[in-house]
Length: 411
Image 1: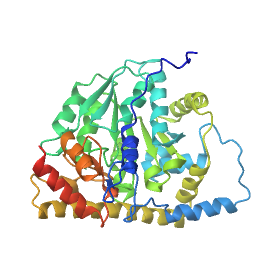
Image 2 (image 1 turned 135 degrees about the vertical axis):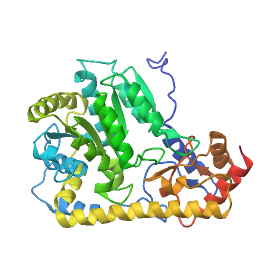
Image 3 (image 1 turned 45 degrees about the vertical axis):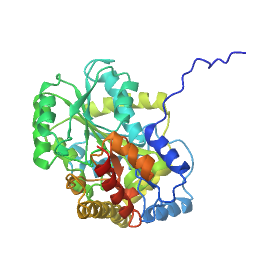
Image 4 (image 1 turned 135 degrees about the horizontal axis):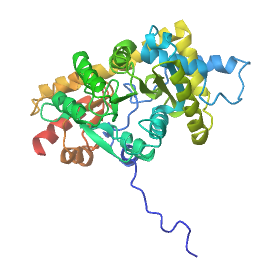
């Protein structure tokens, strides 16, 4: 009997998860996984933040909590405190009552909610033709999320200059200038994934000036606040600056990285509107979209974040935990760069310490990546992106020597 699903084609695997599976099956005792985007300790282990363990005990001991449905838009104290860390405690937009939020399933869910709303209600009803711009390169899910929401015109904007291994500011500003009015631009708030290259404050100001003049929609993706520099306020500078410039905008937030809550799917979509009346109507439509997507959000991860952010001593401890992670990443960057320079590896390696956040765009080409995987059992993305957290004091010499050997032997 023929299967009803006989015509279903085999989908290509998700690259980053396939990489992890290949790593698991590799028998080489020296193997290193520099692929997956998750924090690891110097022992190469996942880290449950001490503050998270503390708050989990508080939740267990609280007999007033139950498992009733949350509000459709999520836990109110989570949404407000999450928006506060993005926009700042004293944000004029918050004080003017024109900031709202939707609790989402991770940062991906926040992007999805934003994309679904924009397709339905932005720049005309049910508009699939509005161009959506994502950086070249970007996190591969950006393209897929907006395409899946129904947008038909997804375009790259210039971002990475491969030759100088840094930001292509002229290309970026040129693409902003030539984009049709009302186009949607997905901007990385900090610790750009995959390049680790962020605009400076002055460059962000130039970007904002063009976007305001050209009437372009700002959609920030903030997946690494605190993780880039170790300071929450520093990493939110761009988002807050755009608010001061009067933009109405969306900001997708993820708490996977900075709370280590990868499998709890804790995300937030912060909405900055012109006034409270506009905000009210936007949130009413967001409720409808949530209802047909996941109907109601989960509480555990959101409670963990809300209790932490709303309790001064726990908030201070969390900031300290985040700084511990950020500092380890910065240390690995400095160490890898120093080792490559000591080995006199051909090329320039200053970009490793100039970049920021979890990822580094090494500049290795696909052939060199293939050599690293096959000959050295060092697993990284085809783009040459590595997760700095995969480096440890025990494996960094092996990785540096492998990069050196690869660059010398494979062009």
